[in-house]
Every structure is written in C-alpha cells, then in structure tokens.
Amino acid sequence: MATTKEGWGRFAGWVLATSLAVALIDTAIAELVRLAHDADLATELETLDLVANFALFGWAGYRVARAWRAFRPGLEAAVLAGLLVGLVAVAYTLVRALEPLTYSDLVQLLAWNVLYAALGGVVGAGLGWRASSGPPR
Image 1 (cartoon, rainbow, N blue to C red):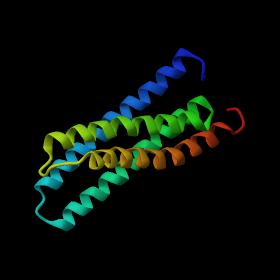
Image 2 (image 1 turned 30 degrees about the vertical axis):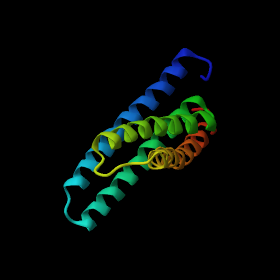
Image 3 (image 1 turned 120 degrees about the vertical axis):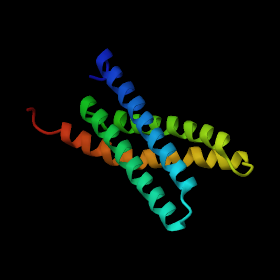
C-alpha cells in the first residue's frame, strides 16, 4: 500500500485527524487548568491530557503501521501529528500567555509535543506492524 494514492491518503488522514483531536483536547484542558483554582485538579487535568495524547498518537501509529504493513510509516505519522500539535500549542501559548515567553520556552513546548507523539507512536506503530505481520486473513 505504500506506493498507492490510497495509502498516502490514509497517512495524511490519520495525521490530520489525530492532530485536530489532540489540539482540541489540549486547548480544552489548558482552558480548564486556567480556570481551576486547585493545584491538584490542575495536575489531574494535565495528566488526563497526557494520557489522551499518548493514546491518540499511539492509535494513529497503530492504524498507519497496520495499513502500510510497516513500522516506520506508523511512527512517522504519529511524530508528524505531534509536530502539528506542537505548532498549534506554540500559537496558543503566544496568544494566551500570562507571562513573557522566551524562544527557549516555545522550542521546549514544541519538543515535548513531538516527544509525546514519538512515545505513543512507537508503541502504536510496533503493535500495528506486529498485527499486520501475522498470517494472511
């Protein structure tokens, strides 16, 4: 499937769908954390956000790796989705920042999003590749 138009369409579809879902969840959680006056509640919301991100990036990696019957495209899809989410996070932070930000803060925010995507993607892509490697169905 790697060379077909359908394969590239699925790849792009999973990247965009995952990016959109994670960006919406991240934005909603960030606004809820902003409104939360309890530090424990804010921490729990942020943890929930990380779990959702990990699961969604992993799911994208799984679906792409299984469709392409290869590990690498699944991981690439998750990481590319993480990069797009990171760019959205940087834009959101620039618009909604309460204190002045440095370039280092923005690069760190982008890097963390890519790292979370890679962690979820490697697990999902590994499972998807393994599921596609079995006997034909």
